[in-house]
Length: 467
Ligand code: ADP
Ligand code: ASP
Ligand code: MG
Image (cartoon, rainbow, N blue to C red):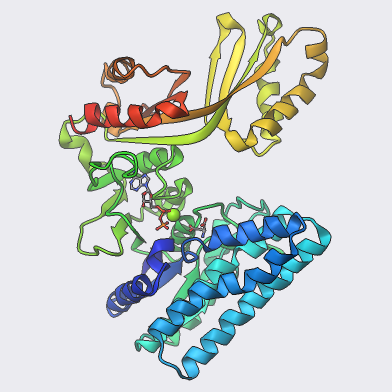
């Protein structure tokens, strides 16, 4: 059993869908294959912006949404399917899905309210539409296929916008649903990105979550491998948009991939590795448009660590902010740190890095910029009486920051890496706001001004990766 996931660009045009269908056709002659698809590129963002506009009272957007959603799918259909019953039926199915979106958007518009639960339901329609489209293209090419919505396979908790799978329940449900489809000789084309909770309410796995869907299903079906097809040759030593001469790594470990993804390497969702590790399933990242390129294998071992380089790859995340809680009265008050993170934990803020300098009586931590106001409000609420009594003297934020992470298993136990990183930043005149080293010694990460990211990543890549 092989799980093959295709990202937004791999289903983003008629040419891309054609190529994707070709790859599925080829591999499904040899073994059972589950195809998983993202929404066509741009469609998820369109759905989210239409939903936000409807909640803000924009009725024109609601009317326009149906056509905006149908257009890219219809264009592919007209290109790849001749006029006939199959094209008409597929068009009707896509139209039905777009109608459902329009009805939901209208409800949001009337209520002027978009709950996380409603948003999750609406945003899944990109994947529902692309899976119907790809299944039709496969059928047209003589590969019997069936679109399958993943709320029939993946069982999650009820955390809308970022649900976690219940892996045992998912194994049972996925096997029960897919077995008859395989037995009927059909290739399942499954929607990525979402599942449903135990009550059957639709939940999403978070942005970029189709990679995670692939490994959840790989785990459930005990696949021999998970192949993530995308628009680059594999996991590169840096974001190719920042560093054009970044090179493709042949093999990296699950832990290295998790660190890189967590610190911004968009090519794989950070949670993807977890279900695969449990069963030791290798994850391959491959280029849909250059299928003969070897790709990157993510598995138990990092092969590149033998290359003699101290570090393997550089990642970065921008749009972050630092919050500092500081004050004389904090000294020796042991529960302050606990209160800080309990308060922040109740918000949507994700804490990327923490640094505590006790002589300064301060705690600094980094969160995503979009969450900083909520986090500040929560902290002011928590420390209201302390602020009044000057026990906590200030709660302040610095915005427009970024984190850069240098990642590689070969750094473990190697002295001098941190020295070289910060010497390189010194040479580049980049100011360091906060520093952390993972206890696994797999990564050293530090916060800098967002404006400095390009310079920092380029210099570190030149110093550590290119040697
Ligand atoms: P998909 O739609 O196939 O899921 P994504 O856009 O989510 O694709 O991820 C692929 C993109 O990730 C690449 O086009 C590249 O610009 C970006 N990227 C960022 N960092 C890295 C990296 N270290 N290696 C490879 N790609 C990266
Ligand atoms: N379509 C979803 C997104 O854009 C999931 C994915 O592409 O992985 O976030
Ligand atoms: Mg992606």
